[in-house]
Length: 326
Image (cartoon, rainbow, N blue to C red; front, side, top):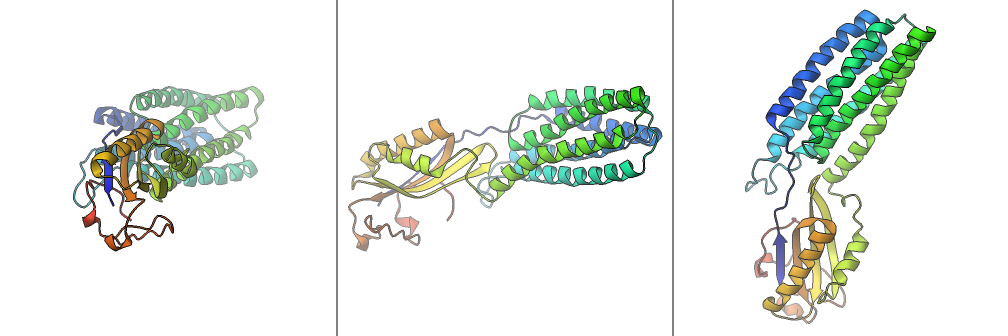
């Protein structure tokens, strides 16, 4: 029995600079203060809702900065994959915070519908206009920084803010034109619904990574079929695919081949690794070869019954570099 492992380093880290994030944090903090003051003076729940939304953005940016810093730290003997999931955890926390905020906004919007208050639509529109410019600028900066789940979760915050502040401008115009104060809480309900909808996908994806589910878009059956099409591969079993980070996937599998020496099986291993890297962007691979013609007395797994003995000592293996622990 031969055990081979393939491991390449092709990670795409978040390329967010500390200067860019500090600038975004400073802009967001100033705008939060502006929204709070203006919302109280204008009696606008929509502006106060925006203040809460932007407060979550500030927290999201801070988490993103911490996660980006941690993800660059090298692997250690204890954390063998490093801190690659720090960004995923940050994305999960960001999305959960957004869901909580959207529920609070919905509650107060419904309350305001039954207890209406006059709104200063002019002030509401000016502050919202400033928000569109500021949030739009931050979004463009983040789009230059990267597309991993951590950055995407922050971009969702910022895009949501840009659209919702634009809606506040329209609402302010409607209040000025028609005098309907109910437009303000209705806008808040729409904002909360948009926040909730945009957050759920981030929660699902980040939770799937944290629970080591198969990456989105990857079908185990299809990958097994592709592996069986590689010349020299007789059978595939015990295949596992998971994500180390949002942009880094890993795979481990047992592959049955003919009873050939390692020098000949190396070509099969190269073909398998090449297929996984090119077709599925999987660069962390641990492939265990099993001989189709082996003796159980030597600790090999019987190919006919497909009995997989995981307690076989890996010390008998050759060429094992790294892999996912079972």
